[in-house]
Amino acid sequence: MLELNRIHHMDAFEGLAKLKNESVDLIVTDPPYGIASRNMKTIRQGRIMSTQEAWGSWDTFHPFDYDVFILRLISECHRVLKPGGSLYMFLAEEQVGYFARKAVQRGFRLRNLLAILKKAPQPSIYKNAWRRGFELCAFLTKGKTGSTFNFLSQAECVNTFAYSTSDRYTSHPTEKPLAFIQRLIRVSSHPGDLVLDPFMGSGTTAVASKTLDRRYVGFELEPTYIRMAEERLGSISNETQMRQERTGVNSP
Ligand SMILES: C[S@@+](CC[C@H](N)C(=O)[O-])C[C@H]1O[C@@H](n2cnc3c(N)ncnc32)[C@H](O)[C@@H]1O
Image 1: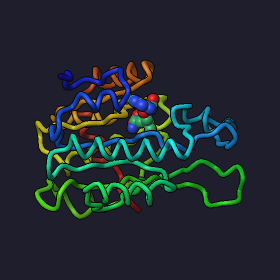
Image 2: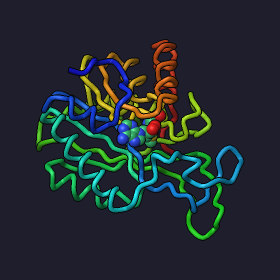
Image 3: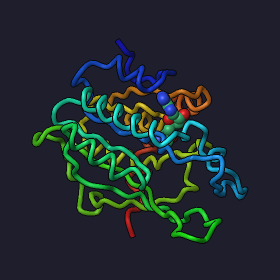
Image 4: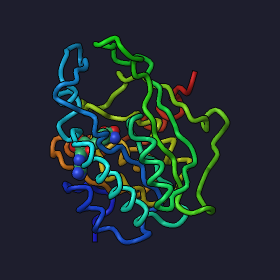
């Protein structure tokens, strides 16, 4: 049995296997996108480097292996979610079609795509395609009815969310905006519910859950990231974190 309200130093699939069928109310996760490479360049902290160096070698996959990874992840998320539970999964643009098709085949209902909009996206090095100014998050539910959806307000329940990449709590290369994750959790769960993130990174899902009185559990391979997450969790002041959610700027 896994201890709750903890980020376990464990491979995601090893951890998922320890969770019982239909034991989780909500999954919010930001897995590797499978797009980092040694050859593709990007700019990070003003320096040109490979996307693998910028995002981490955990993001590099052979395309065949990535498809297998996504299939396993969909299947395990479906198994551990309670009927009516929701899944929010960040994905690279390239993966959305495959992911959505397979998730629906597995029994999920695709409800929306959400976009987080970067106010100042990375400059383009190659200048041969559009700069990437948003990231996508798929919203799915398990089963046809009975899903929690606390419609907060028209302004808060639009599927875009603008944020500044400079508003970060850690040096994790792909930290997600806390106010956005808090919003997903407020909409799709109730206090006391169990929120799972199999790829915790700097712990944003855990921090959001804790500030909103939800239970959480998750996994992360890198000890450095677990330490970052634990530091964040240890210094939570509900008031300050909630204030950020209240003042989080929404779509243009
Ligand atoms: C995209 S990041 C998540 C960032 C997170 N949303 C945040 O706000 O900090 C993905 C994380 O998954 C971790 N990871 C990659 N493969 C993993 C695996 N098989 N099991 C557990 N964690 C893994 C990486 O170390 C990385 O920190």
